[in-house]
Image 1: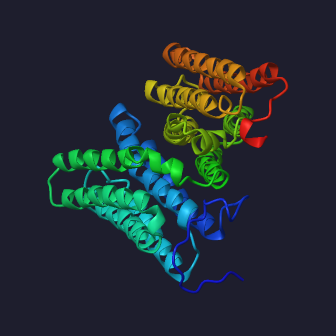
Image 2: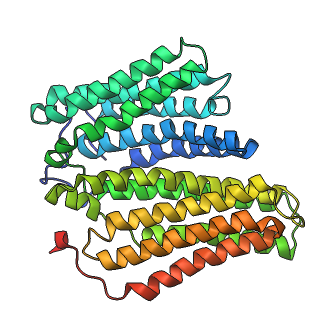
Length: 398
């Protein structure tokens, strides 16, 4: 049984504790509310996947993703799992649930509720940083600017509640820009007070599993509304293979070298690129699930409508593009730059081909379209094995 009495925050990334740290039970429970939030975002996109709908989906995905980022990066440094921290995390969870409730009308009738929910989530994070600032003088060069930046952004979100649309959304954009820029502006402190090099990659991996799960949910939901037939079964198989292939491509090239090199060599550009490229990757995976469900709920005999076709092709292309960029922040840091470069080229090239299929595939029936995307994913796995060869030992593992 863990000790949960009140105790002050402690720096958990100072190299003296938790060398092989893993996600806690509380973090895994915390992730569950994001499963709900991601599902609500996906439902919103399913209801409107026109260009305006896609842009709205992305706009609302940003604060949801950033709420997870903020809590995760605080926890990797200062999580003490005491009573106060658990209660604060519970309040954050209520805030994320409120975000999920307000997602559908987040750019309309429930935008005030969405803004207030985000203010609640960020206010808890600001209080956590204030708590760490008070108890840990040695890390105030990090906690002070982070707390100030996040406070300013939260106040702008709060002010937006009293501003009419569309000006309210302009304030949201300013606040999110401040939120995202705050960690970059204190880049030196990320070297002096680094994140945990094994805990953070695991947390990002778990979030990737969450969004991949949305694709599987879409397959199940889609096949349950169709009659069992060879075409339906083949569609389900292909859709699942696409999700499995993305899992394979991500985790087959998964390592913590971007964080290690930031900590040991000060390569902060690679560090921030690794973090932020996960956002379009998560967007793409979620949109694939929505596209798959759209295919199942439409006619399986007629060619896909342009919006369905573009949603599937565009989201898969975005995933492949993101994977190509991620390869350059992981494998290259691990001393395998030629392989990282070649794999990235294949990802970028295949992303372009998928877009070509999206443009010219107006005559292809749904099963054929899904099959082509599946073949593109499987080829990426085969190419990866063909060019990889023996791997070198990362410099940080010597």
